[in-house]
Length: 246
Image (tube, rainbow, N blue to C red; front, side, top):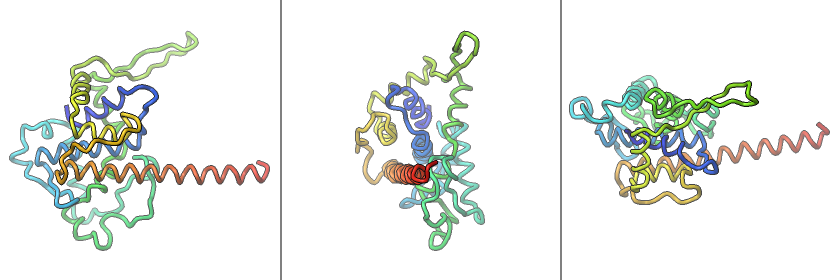
C-alpha cells in the first residue's frame, strides 16, 4: 500500500474521541502522495518547487506507477503545470477545508516563471487535496478494505455505515504505524491521529519528505486559522442578531 492509503486507514482506525478533521486529512493525503512520487523519482524538488522527475523510464514497476490514485496525481500535476494553465489552485470554500486567505494566486506576479516549470509544495497540497478523502474512500471500498455494515433503526429504517474490514491492507497500515514509520507518523500526528502530541522530528532534515512535511504543517496551521476566523465571524453575527431581537 502507498503512504496515502496507510494514512487514511490509520485515520479511520482512531478512537471516536480523536476524529480527524476532513480538511486536514485532505492536505495530509496530498502530502503523502507527493512524498511517494518523490521517493519514486516521478517528481523532484528544487527548493520547495515540485518539478518533473525521471519517472518515465526508471519509475516503471514501482508502487507509484502501479497505484491508480498516484498515477492520477501525477497526471493532474502535469495538467496544472502546463504553460498557460497557471491560476489560483486553492480549493473553493471547504472543498479541501479552507477558503481564500487573501494571498496572490499561484502563478501570478513574481511566481509566473517558476509556475511554468513546476508547482510549489503548498500549492500542490491545496490543489491536489480537493475532495481527496472521497477518492480514497471509494478506492478502499472497491478493494474490500472498507465495507458497508448494515444497521436497523427503529426496526423499520435500514441504514448502513462504512467500516474497515480485517484485511491485509488494514493490518499493514497498523503495522507501519506501530513500527514508528517516520513519514507516516509525522503526517498522522500533524492532523491529530495521536491527539495533541507534537509531530515527531524523525524525518531527516533537508530531505524531500521533510520539505513536504514542513509544508503540510504550514498548511494545517493556516487552515486552523481559517476555521478560527470563521467561528469568530459567526459568533459576532449571532451576537448581532440577538441584540436586534432575532
